[in-house]
Length: 250
Image 1 (spheres, rainbow, N blue to C red):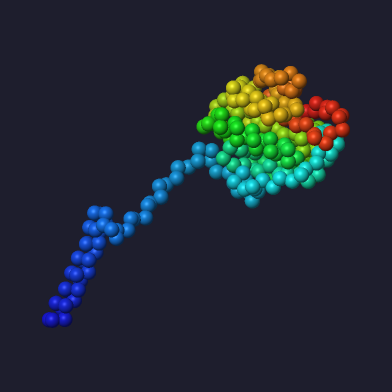
Image 2: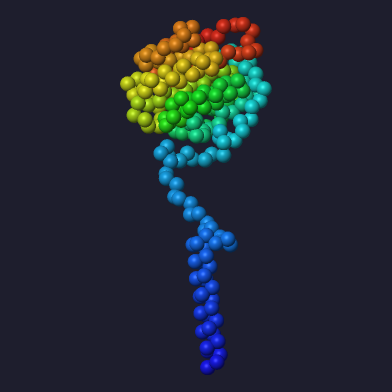
């Protein structure tokens, strides 16, 4: 009997100790330990997940190299190219052949100057147009430049050969991800913002669709066929011998 009473007394003392600790915590006692916060469930991203491919993103440092654009945009090569990230909070890439996000890594090489410009513009676009979808970038050049035409899936890439060219798709009026299928689907004010930002960033040439009614300095912004869903940006080659670049297609 004495042993049973001792066991009951021990249990009652243990329960009392726990209750006292709880009361002390609730009263903010000196030795109270704050409960671990419960992490709120994160809402699903409105843009939807991007399938990871192992490529660098803007969360990683871009590995800039001292690149060289050799030859001409329509007859050239790329030396020591820099790869544009596949995506990030303010940037997505589009594969025009597979028609998907992101673009494949071997289609995203350029000179370090061009990659720096794209990164500056995507940050500025996000700052001036908060709440809009990320800037959607298409093809740049192959890792070592050279032909980027029909052999690699896209008729019309007569340029994009030496890391000085990039395609940037117009935002869609319906606010969805992807490429606008017709001029009427283009969000013209946002598209004009992109044109203005690339001009301000120092683009040498910006080709725009003849049916999208985008404007800019006439010696820089030029309407050109087959550009009603994207603008084509070309930068100056700092190593150019003075040969004027020919206006190419996509």
